[in-house]
Figure 1 (spheres, one colour):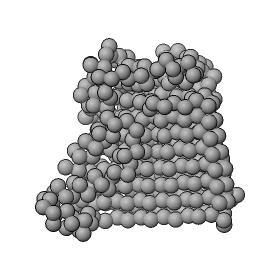
Figure 2 (tube, helix red, strand yellow; figure 1 turned 45 degrees about the horizontal axis):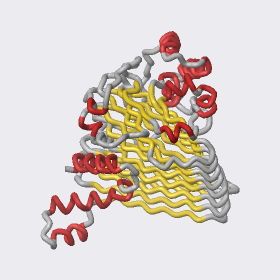
Figure 3 (cartoon, rainbow, N blue to C red; figure 1 turned 30 degrees about the horizontal axis):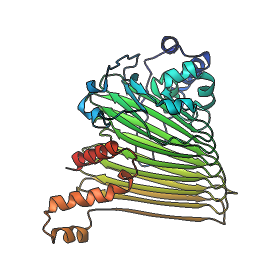
Figure 4 (tube, one colour; figure 1 turned 60 degrees about the vertical axis):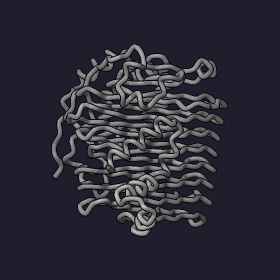
Length: 433
């Protein structure tokens, strides 16, 4: 039975909130229209996971202004993600939804690259933001959580790379929560034709209290453009998280996802890529570690519309204690997408008797002249690998640790910023210890 939920924020609140941010009328209208739909739309479907009783609507919301004067003021967990001894030219840090620190190189600014928070984008680049905000990838009325997000979005980033511009250094954003305020983050990455960019984001929270995170990222990849999207999510165990990362890829475009989903609370995640153009390409790699009693559901879906398009999915998850980890991998080839290739592999490694892991590969093929394949496995640490390491003098616990790190390595190595990569390794170490 679905629990009836009533949002404690009305149209007057949403209007005043939008006004306080100085938003354009079109964005206020989107918020108000979305608010009207929140209680009429169903929750998203999470296959094999019952989310009706999860907390998505009991939270605090409001304007937060918590800037810092220098990187030296950052807590250790945030400092570890950057190198404060070097000049951080393309870095944005948001604390509780407000900008705490921001910088972009002069070279990128001269080339017309926009790298800014979502509030600044609304006020300074309103027409450009309007073109992409929940119009190309994620729609407001898909379900209750997308509508709720559109009504209350209060943080995030807008990145725009013009045609023929190559962003050589990664753009890094850290979303840092240390208050009771919920997180409604919206990220838009636009790479116009023949451009390229690498974007790395980190989510961290430290409050330890019950809270909600509702996160949407939209990635638009133009003709012959390339986007590498890396993320490490590490929200604490009181946070119920909905995260939707979605991409649209044009002709000969490439979108690569490297997602380290390390939240300690209940999580439902959607990662969907639409290969619209001929010759388009998507590669999605996800690693997770589930522990305690948390429940996590991850859906990765690549839909082929263009001819000669290629989509690869790789999901690796580790489950311990009494946690549950569900992987839903979906490769869909639409009619007309001839010569396309859809491949996927999902593997779950269980470390305890009460842990539950599911790997559900799905292929939906509406075209004959294609390639498609899948592999899935759920099991425990390979005894042959364990024996091999122990036979060389390595203790059992250390041998298991090495096997786990090797199991998760395909995604860890994809992260383009060394500090972020090291931090993900440390998070994995703490969670499996």
